[in-house]
Length: 128
Image (tube, rainbow, N blue to C red; front, top):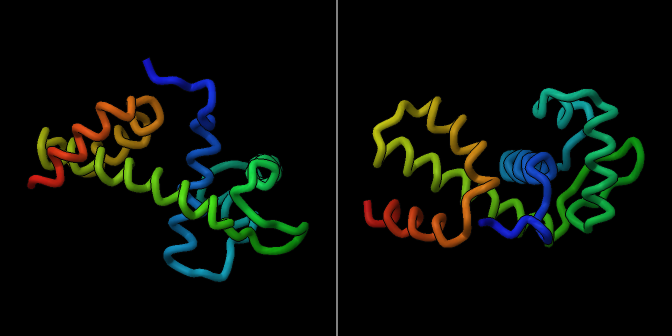
């Protein structure tokens, strides 16, 4: 079983991944409004998540300003995104599942898959 005691919630991981993707596209920070829209949540929910991320050291954010990932946040975002991409490729390219379904399934699986299983998947995908 996956040790979730010291891990982040699925929701927090999703926020980190979204901020990481936004940072890759445009390194100018992310507005709460844009984050809420991307996550399909209210601005209040996004704001609460950003406060938690700031407390955990993943983002820098001042009220009414852009949100920026810290180095710790960028590292975690890269890890989460790597899991997502790898699992998506495994489901799509090895199992032959449609890309859109593979993306949806990867989004759910990435949070619960053990590190051991993930590394085996990654090894197999990298051999393609």
